[in-house]
View 1 (cartoon, rainbow, N blue to C red):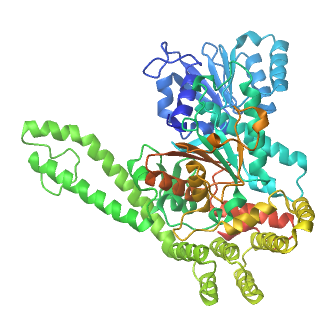
View 2 (view 1 turned 90 degrees about the vertical axis):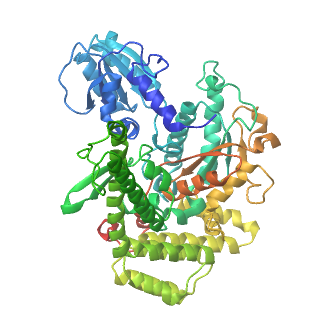
View 3 (view 1 turned 90 degrees about the horizontal axis):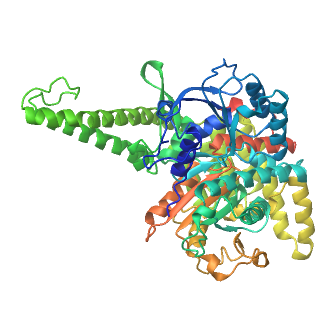
Amino acid sequence: MALNLRQKQTSCIIRMLNLNQSLNSSGNANEEVYKILIYDRFCQDILSPLIHVKDLRKYGVTLYFLIDKDRKPVPDVPAVYFVQANQSNIQRIIMDISRSLYESFHLNFSSSIPRQLLEDLAAGTLNSNSIDRISKVHDQYLEFVTLEDNMFSLAQKSTYVQLNDPSAGDRDIEETIEKIVSGLFGVLATLAVVPIIRCPRGGPAEMVASALDLRLRDHLISKNNLFSEGGNLGSSLQRPILCIFDRNFELSVGIQHDFRYQPLVHDVLGLKLNRLNVQGEKGATRSYELDTSDPFWVANGLLEFPEVAVEIETQLSKYKKDVDEVNKRTGGKEGAEFDGQDLIGNTKHLMNAVNSLPELTERKKVIDRHTNIATVLLGEIKERSLDSYAKKENDMLIKGGIDRNELLSVLRGKGTKVDKLRFAIIYLLSAETMPQSEMEAVEAVLREFEVDTCAFQYLKKIKSLNVSLASVNSASKNNIVDWAEKLYGQSISAVTAGMKNLLSSDQQLALTRTVEALMEGKPNPEIESYLVFDPRAPKSSLGTGSSHLKGPFKEAIVFMIGGGNYVEYGSLQELVQRQQPAKHVVYGTTEILTGVEFVEQLTLLGQKMGLGSSSSIASAH
């Protein structure tokens, strides 16, 4: 049972586009119906990485519009709506139905529609005597964005700020947790699996794990539940493990520079929803799709940048050799570009050459695409010394510090203001202790380059608070923790753990190391305090769990609260590649963040606490 989330979510969307009819063996409806698709911006982001515009026609969609745009009536065609369940969308749907814009309305909500909104919809359409135009209302449980076969995001913005905001009240925190639980529930419903849940004690991870466990228990009481298709998978070898973490578990990964291809493309060039815009030759902007349909991206995304450059050269040489081979056989000129113009000669070879033309053309397109991307990346790397940042940050995280002269030299060297700030933060997180004079020197250089230091001051404050927490005796420690959590948000104690969860000598992330231990299920001091939740088990065993719930597991879903990135995703996929027998890991997060975007959230928290300089980070890159 492979947890292919992308495939499962795509199947759900295709079924929805086919008016929620059951599909035949070829994956299409038995009867083709032409229809119109209406979506909101959030659901547009869900659809975008999965179904291309050209594919919509295949499913009978002739027109598609955003819900908030003015639309003309098309009275003889059904409309499929795919939107979030919120007040503004409900009001717009009522207006469309009362105006009889379309023949019939198939309403699909990305998550479960609250009863109050359903009553509003019924009342609004009854008032205009148009309720009979609604064919069906479906809760789709698809409120997440799948970017790769094994990677998803709940697309919930600024979760880290919401959970760590010192001014956030209990109700605000509960609402954020509830949104995360709702999104995760949708992922599990789409996969039709009820996992064993593991998480560290305390902080948002436990809050989400506990609330998700209750949500699943309540849902499983019903006979017609969303998980009945998956069967009662009792053995831990058949059921996956869901490992939930909070960003403070390993803060550094959200901030550090990385030198692998996928993280670089995301962090430096701004890959968003698998789309990338880069400056081509002559200043024109080129747009690329980077997803599972691109074989080079799939095969080389985890390689270091220099290895990728070598691989592009290798692929280009192989392509030229294959073109020469075809031209030689068909009597064309050696060394000619393969454009189909020189195909003269032997008829037998001519047919083979014609058949190989689409494959060679596609290969050339992929090579050209990645040559352009690598060229733009190389320009950024040279201009900002990104290779130096990545190497020195890595060294700091492994060794726990850096020579003072080297530290100041990097801060005074190349790079944007945010590059310098990220480097200073990694220094702050990696060093066990730091002399006051060194700290002052770092802050002086940041001020000299007019870097907004709110994020730096925020983490410095949190770290000093943790040091003071560690130094007090255990009798009075609880009171200080209570006070600290009230003052600085929910995750203070988790940050302390995050300071220790630095890279091990083999450069494996603490997250990857922990997931590996949780999947193995062997006794391990690093995870012995982790909580266990089994939504299928009787409530009496809540939080403790018997031995069969501790593994081993073949499949895992790893979820990071507060923002994830391609560095963690890559690290987990590397873990899978070296596992024997083969294992499977899906990585998810509340939102995918670049280093700059995560630092912006830390800056906002610093500002909320009245720390650091007040200039905007937006002007810093």
